[in-house]
Length: 125
Image (cartoon, rainbow, N blue to C red; front, side, top):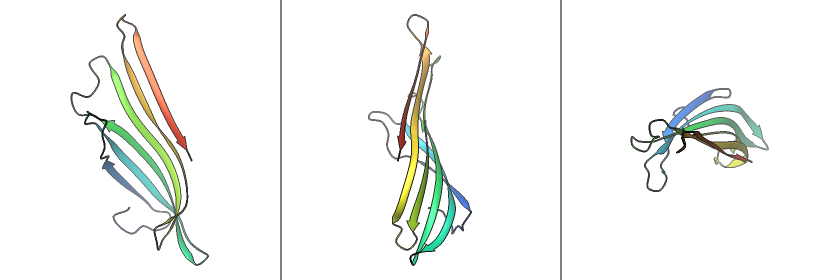
């Protein structure tokens, strides 16, 4: 949530570090979310707020967990959401979103050739 009141048409940003890491590792996602207050309206006697957001994240790995010399490896995520909230209760009236995670690795193979792998996972809903 924003640190101060926001009006229709305004945006705010939040950055944070995720709390979880892969078992046996210490890397965590660094997230950034930009939220826009698209609309504030009264419908059927209820004050409704429509928010849209863009989320990005990069897996930050501590020294020793990153790629070896000659390798490139990273994991990023991104997503978009749109929600309508009941302003009084904070309950979600409707929501939609999509996003995904991309993991990339590039490094030398034993025979001197190049190994390259990109894995993409997407969610739409």
